[in-house]
Image (cartoon, rainbow, N blue to C red; front, side, top):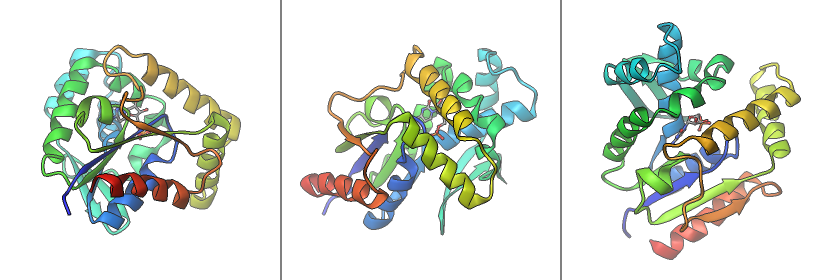
Length: 222
Ligand code: C5P
């Protein structure tokens, strides 16, 4: 029974965090949502009126920013300089800007350093875009989750309905496509499947089926 690292990458709204939480709970591992860290930095830049394209300003901001991910009863709580921003980081104005913050190479270097520190004791499920390729290149299990953009927009829409948030499926689809485009085309650690990652197309799978598929891979190496 050894503690391993599980890396889950993939495009926006592919269900990464939902399955990562289930897997972490099943294994009593910690769950680390790296996207939440980029979102927290974006929220702070927005609050301080900093231009997302201003690389030096964004890096300087990060160096003076504390981001903590705390395990809570329903997954994860995000603390930005000690304040709970779990809800705010999901707002639309953060979502449409986060990819511009995440494309700066020195921002990524610092984030990767912090994420590696968080994962150093293994027993971790981490989700993001560059976990299998850069953050945890030695992860014992690497998963790349994909689904059609129509399916991803539909899931996000239904999630919003449940939360009582009004949204439009066409707008969601455009936002997801735009984020994927920026994330996949940036120079620094773009969104790409690691050569040793297992690709799982979740388009016609349930959450439970995806979790079971990943747990099968975990059982092979644990
Ligand atoms: O996972 P989530 O959709 O919350 O991520 C928000 C954004 O953060 C992504 O669209 C991407 O720009 C950035 N990100 C990243 N690398 C990660 C995780 C997220 O660049 N490991």
